[in-house]
Length: 272
Image (cartoon, rainbow, N blue to C red; front, side):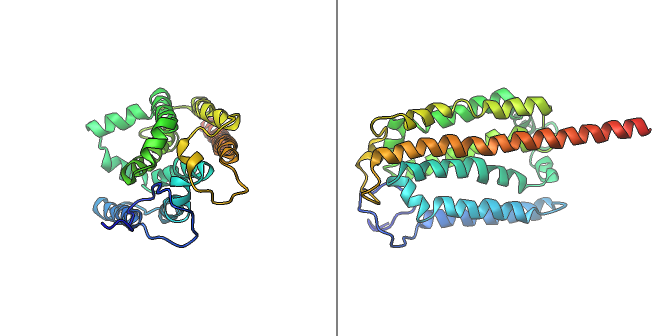
């Protein structure tokens, strides 16, 4: 690999330019995801193939990881980096879970298998919240961000960690019925709990008097009128406002959907 080629978006310290840049690693990863998803459906003979959900997940990954969002978030703007976090955890991850039908999950983790036990355990509230929050806090430590985003491998690991965090977060909510362990009110409490810990780094950024991340403080400015401290404060606002909204929407969907299912079940029981 020559010095002019980057496989994954990472900080370079070079002045920002709107000239398009190719990131082979990003496109290769997206190709592997697409081929893997299609191959899995053929091998397992899914009863249906959720093309819509897969298209949402794949296109959202492309926008999040590729130029210009990937490059801006990797080494220029903390606010864009935060937007990447939200897209990967709150959009890409749930779409991926829905892109595999229930019979696909059954074949991936058949009854009695170790994978089945792991996924069933992970469908509980406490493991989901602990792992999700641990990843969120760890990947927002200034020392971790400054060190990781300076290399392509570190940047890739941060992006992968956020996608994993999203899969962990949404599994108790969107996992197929055979794996679910939470009732309606438990799901609502779980989603509320997922909004608490991320508030810590969000508020630290909002009320910070100086940039928390040396990487973004010293990065070449994309626009000289937009300071590094304003960028950090905007990142905190984006994380809190736009990070909580999907979870509150999901809480409302859970309430109204499962309430309707309960009423329907009650009506059927009375009719019989």
